[in-house]
Image (spheres, rainbow over the protein chains, first blue to last red):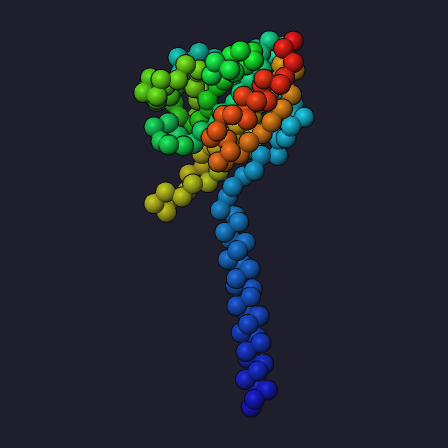
Length: 79
Length: 101
């Protein structure tokens, strides 16, 4: 009887462990995509519209200017 | 900003907002550099910085706060994510150290 109790405790603990691991994994999925780009990599070129509807090509600055790209979350927020 | 200009750098802000929203935002906060619209999230994907935000139980993918410094050869010199990306000092420091030519 006692050993049965112990067994169910172990099973229970293992189950709880699995659930906890699952929960942690689910949390990691909440989904910060870290950039795979790092210092030394070539910056991917792009063409985007600026706030005056003018096209900006990153490649236009090659050989001319250093470029700081500041990605922000949304306009009109603290981000 | 003056330090960045002195170090021969241009600054672009990038988000998923429309040009119209960015223009209103630029006027409100008085930025002098262009704000770029990545409405189809193409560049966010290229740069690998889409992040899921949960707002009222719905998920939205917007930019992760990230600052890249790119030199004149098109080579990334520094990458800062999240909190450290808010403070421009490091980006300024990196630019200042880059060769002028």
